[in-house]
Length: 92
Image (cartoon, rainbow, N blue to C red; front, top):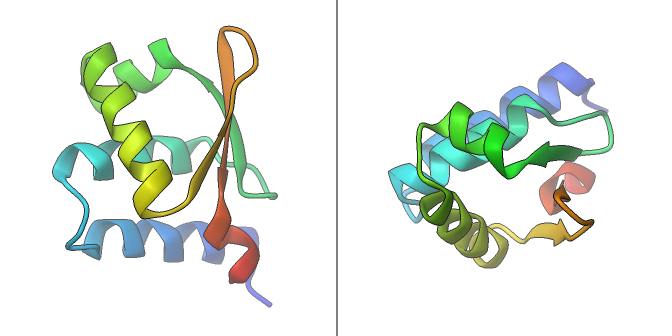
């Protein structure tokens, strides 16, 4: 079984090497992984994602939607702060 650090590094590597993802999707995905907890989930505000990725609100939103399709990123809406879950976290 992998440690938290090993899981995080593995997912970071997979995101960076994924040829099916755009640069914007990779930036948003890596920003989410930066904040991920030991369950593969993170609570982060749109404003934080914009700052970490260097993208506009609409760019981050578009990337989140495509990440939910391409890598099965689960988005749970909770008011002004969403919860994001990496499906792959449970598989590794």
